Image (cartoon, rainbow, N blue to C red; front, side, top):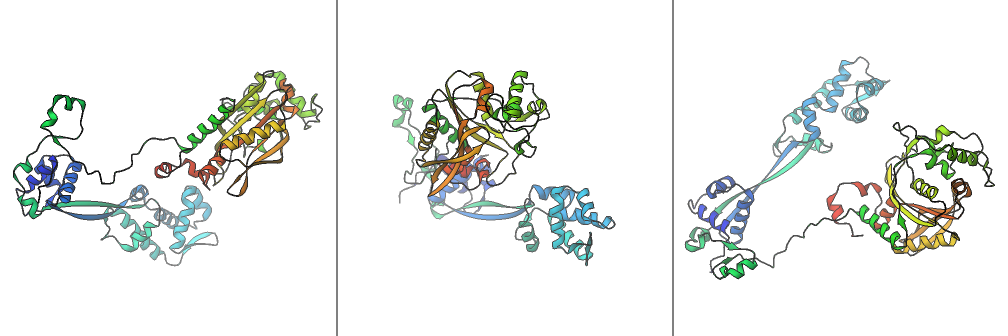
Amino acid sequence: MDAPSLLNPERRMLKAMQTDVGRTWSLNEVLKACNWTDQAVAAAAGHGLTNHGMVETMEHVVRTVKAASEGLKAAQEGLLEQRLWSWIQSTESASMADLQSAFERHEAGPGVGLLKRLGVLLIDGTFQSDDPEHVGREIEQRATFIRGLPCSIETADSTMLEHFKSRRGLIEIAEQTTRTWSLTEAGAHLGGEHLEEKEAVSEITTELLQSEAWKDAEFRSFDVTLESASPRTGRSHPMQALIERVRAIFLEMGFSELVDDYVQTAGWNMDALFIPQDHPAREMQDTFYLENPASLPLPADLVKAWGDIHEHGGVTGSVGWGGAFSKATSEKGLLRTHTTVNTIQYLAAHPDEACRVFSVDRVFRKEAIDRTHLPEFHQIEGIIMEEGANLQMLVTTMKTFYAKMGCPEVRVRPAYFPYTEPSLEIEVKWRGKWLELGGAGIFRPEVTEPLGISTPVLAWGMGLERLAMLVLGLDDIRQLYISDLEWLRNQPIL
């Protein structure tokens, strides 16, 4: 049998182990004998020698129960049920209202649930138990278990272990593998030049070839048949990649990008778009109003023009919304609820210049977070202002955009928006179903005339996250913003 070709670390480890043939070597003993400090070097050398049949590797797995972040806190301050039970015992006629005042909201609900499972019930408005001693014993057992961590999983109380496994953040099970090595007969008898450490060349360089040192060099061997790990390279987040794709499509179609501020006035955000000042969308439950700045000044002539439009329609032929227009309401500071607020300001600054502009940017609304809503999201916005712009041009533009996004089947249907007439909802066919992805229309005279615009303005807007859910096949919008590296690595390149 030919002698194996060993690497230098393998030679050193084997030579050290041959000083005590019958011994079982631990990691620390190998490190000391070989004068190493890096555990990875010893582990790799042991693995290589095992593959060559020179040593035998024994593995021992130890599983330990440790206190997690909430468990460490509970060991110091007490378990949630322990603190609640102590409070109930020290409070005369403890009620739910008293408990909610004494504890944080995020503790009161779960704490009551834990006590209920221990037999502590809310009867006639107060907390009562038929067997307080049993409740105390059970809680003390739990507290003793938490205080006694860490411990081996074999010695842990199985009942307590199963209980705390069902509670988030209190315990974690750590697994540690220790390895020992012993010589085989082949390893014990290998010697001579096979154990002499030599400089091994792992990379052929120009300098090596030019110096002719390669003639006497020892080259490290590689087994090219072994599976190799896939390299992990950096890549764009799916949302950023989608933004870049949308941006590229609009730029390709001849549009210019518009970027502007998040903080706006209610005047530009809503009054300019002919949204009535008593519209429900303006309420605090839908809009983030600011304390600083609470208000921002607006030009008096602009506010007057909006007021005339809202109160009686101005010179547009509209009857307006009626009622009194408030300058103070118009100057309130807020976080923009749509990106149309920026395109309308661009139009106001360039009322006589034909343009095609778009934006992909963040907007903010007071939404409850669930699988389809977020308080902060992205909106795709675009306008075309030029002589002769019409509804057919708008529909064709939308169909072209979605076709480039990979959705060739597009249809539109009538809709209502306060600032466009006619208004359309845009739907695309995805996996056999029609899905609504955005709104579009032509700005009403009540929007354009106060700004001195005399040509038609085509406008559209759509949610980027909804488009992302469609492209990535998601059913929960929150998946787009979680820090799950494995999920991110497995997403398609957009």
